[in-house]
Image 1 (cartoon, rainbow, N blue to C red):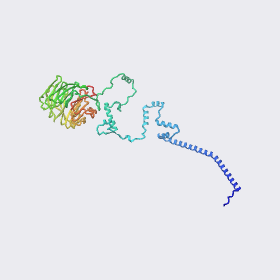
Image 2: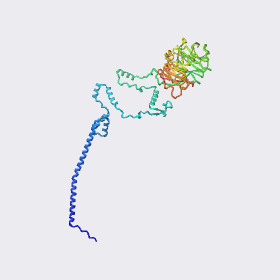
Image 3: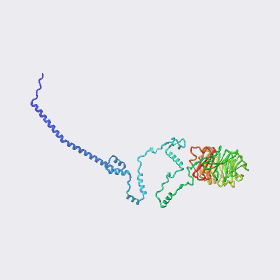
Length: 551
């Protein structure tokens, strides 16, 4: 058994108590020191925060000072976005972005005295125009193709190959359609036209305006000269609506003085119709037994109709005043198997019959007897009188044109049609200014008569190449503003040429619409109010030319 631990004595207990008292005193002193140091720390933190705020304010002031030295809209935008405590700088920035400041009333008055208003406007414009764009998008400059096969754009395709078009070409195509619909470019769409000034120059101008507003009526009048590009016209019922020909219609011609049209064809009939553009009632029809009509023509006085056959030596004269049909069995001195093509002089004195082997027979219209005979080299295919009936133009198959004097029956001059391999048709304008020669290649050369009488190899003023087959018919309108050319070898081969611009009217014939078929004959009314085309379907198509007010 171990002995028990000895209990501490009084000396040991006293030492422990002393140590405990010392620790308590130390702890009390430490708490007092901490209490004394706490307000000092709070003061130090507050001073550090104030110093940091002062440094931030100084830094912002330095930044503002640095920004004020640089110029430009970018610096001003940064001040507005990233912060600027000064309202003055913000107001100044907004004023700069808004543009140049407006002048005060006093300053404007002084400027008006010193300089004109136009100079101030020019200066202001120059300030705006001097600014360059911020960037340029390359995609804007690239051409974008438009699908033309869409049902809304299919009508603008001129051929099946145009499945896509650029925006510029489509815009041009839309402008062309608008011009066709409006009959040209309206005045408000022309860039060259400017708005009239609102200020009146004098009191007389205001009086004229008052007079204009105080009366009614048609203030717009048609131009005297025919405009080019678009021909204002409308399609009427066929001239022979009440009696179509059975087969090919050989001739259509307007009466020289009455509002009447004549048709004749292979069905052995000659018919007369009144032209009103609405019903076109039939006046009379005559039947020529076993006599298919090759060509029919009014006399100049309009009292007779002369008709030749396809395979006959004789021809018929129909007297409309008496209603009698006179057969001309044979003309003495004319040794031909068939009498087909002929022309009547504008003065009504002569009838020129085209024979074979280059012979031309000049007959008297009164007696229908032979006056004289002329001959060209080769075979003569077409002839035409001048408006004064003093000369005859004869077109040979070899492409040569002979000019004859009617009185002496002598050849005055001869020239070659440029590029012609075979002559087909010829026409002289009503004002004796132009000669049109149509060849087998489809080219129609337009010459001036002065050059044709002097040179042997004249240059045409215009070579019309809109026909792809033989040009079989050419004719001028009475005002010499339109030249009609046609071919009987393909459908819709009719073109109307504007003179003197020598351009083709784009709205005739109607695009992608069969209406004319094979054109056999053409004619204009005495004052160009109507235009008629005879086709192989037995119809005399009738068109109203709206530019001309009379028949």
